[in-house]
Length: 76
Image (cartoon, rainbow, N blue to C red; front, side):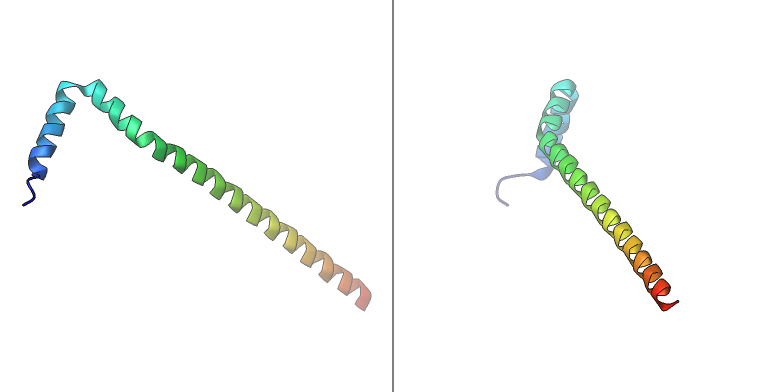
């Protein structure tokens, strides 16, 4: 349609990968490495957020338990 055949391009890529496997792997990793870095940073940030929420939840539950204990002591 626009002069670009997907099948032909894919065949050329497969032939290139077969003739130059190490160079092909190098280029693939070179292209994907920024995405790996972004993924690692986002996973680290998510882990920090989850840890922070767990600490807050634990702190709030401890505070509620202390308030309930104090109220029970005032009632007696």
